[in-house]
Image 1: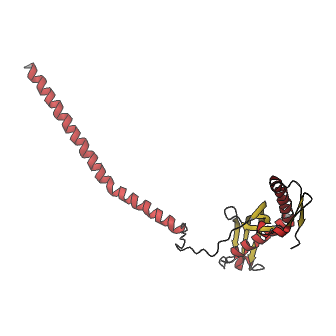
Image 2 (image 1 turned 90 degrees about the vertical axis):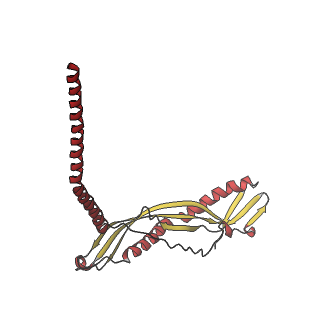
Image 3 (image 1 turned 90 degrees about the horizontal axis):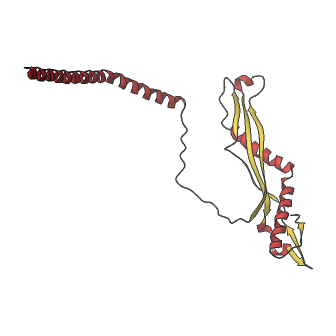
Length: 224
């Protein structure tokens, strides 16, 4: 009799456990089914927010033309002997005056640029060198500017102020950038970049000619 009661108890416990499992699963399935519409609404809301963000703050799309035209290829023999890194602040404006706050457009541009100078060795001909009495005389071509360009990775528009009744001038930043390149080149020239390029070139070439067996070198300048 006791064995039958024990067996009955085990069966009852097993039935209760199975019933509890199915009840829990049913509740979970019901909860998921009830939450599904809200999940879809949430996903739709997130998608709408993403679309609105892309609309209000569009990401520029840059598409290069797949066709490339090579116009010219030249071999160069440039001895670059000095580089300047220059920063200039340039202001560009249009429509200023009494009604500037309505019709004006003003831009403050911070320009970073590079100027490189040296000697073009293509211009050094055999007749420009003379060796007499153990002395090598070299008539160097004049130093020249090889590169004077903005560093677009470092240059930026610091501020732009456009009037209430006008739109930004699409050409103003281009004009400011062109002026910035001119001013960077001007600053380098005024600081004596060409003279320093010549001095550096002579210092390098003295070592170069010495390695070739010409320990005594005199440089003269080509007036052209």
